Length: 145
Ligand SMILES: [Zn+2]
Image 1 (spheres, rainbow, N blue to C red):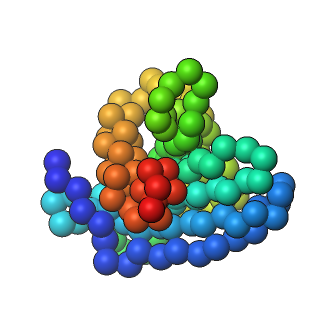
Image 2: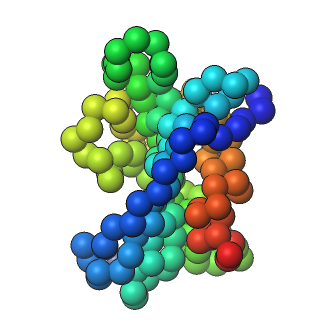
């Protein structure tokens, strides 16, 4: 399934609660076959004393049909960054929606255990890999600008 970005990519910069370093966020729709397919939020961290990593949330649901509805939304998330004993960045499943704990947009937020057993997990990896390789903020943060 060929993926493309939607037309309305946005970015914003925050300040980290733990260390005051900047957090860069990018979000956008990913389209499949020309129609909105998933929404992602990517947060890139520059913590002073920790690894520089990125956390990618991906939300699947029904998009663009009348008023916003969240009841079929489901979200996955991963951390991408250095891990012990491996060269290069690795992706690790984490609990989804941590950046937006009260928002209905994320729907059912899967934790790692639930995500591992979910039939849409391969779709999540496809979208998160697409974001990692093609979103300029995330790609630059993980692989260097
Ligand atoms: Zn920090």
